[in-house]
Amino acid sequence: MPVEFEFINLYRYYIGNIFLPSLLFVIICYTTLYFDLADFEDRIMVSLTSLLVLSTFFNQVSQTIPRTAYLKLIDVWFLALICQQFFIILSLVLVETLRLRSASVHPPPLRVSPAGGGAGAGGGSFVKGDAFVRKRNDLSSALKANRRMRFLFATSLVTLLVCFIPVCVYSLIAPVRSK
Image 1 (tube, helix red, strand yellow):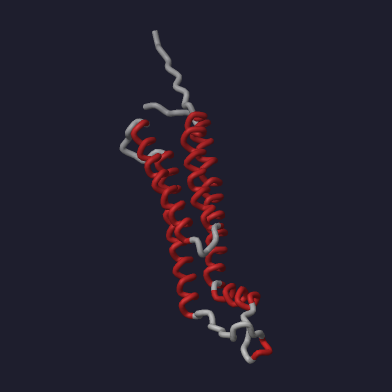
Image 2 (image 1 turned 120 degrees about the vertical axis):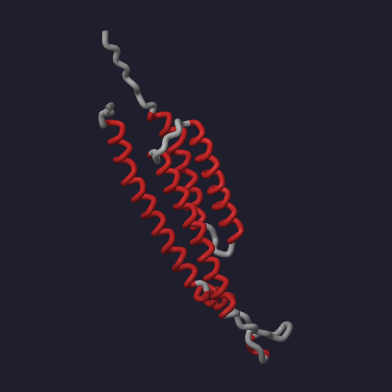
């Protein structure tokens, strides 16, 4: 009398409890590229915290699924996301380095005017708009790099999803071969 077993993968559990939360951690890390450039401490702290939580989450998930000698699809998923976050953190450091370098190379000029005197009193007055334009020009390399990183990491995340989702769907549809 032959006995047949049919095993069903609980893919909804993995989507809701593993894939979506881990993707949200990467999105949180990515949004730090939209923070103010001068706010490096918040940018790096949010990104590092997100990376730490994702790696802890990966460790927890790895302990709950069966151990195998080969890489599983979920391992590849987490490794890709951890690498994505690591490169985002490196880009934040690069943008901060560019920002600090441009600020130190082009320090804003110091203008002194007599107390109570304007432009007609023999001294030049400090024009606020002029300072804003000068500050924006000094930070142009950091701003350009930050914009490029936004595009690069958004594109790489979409590429990861476009490559990963069909593989997951195929693994659910494909018949399991037993020897």
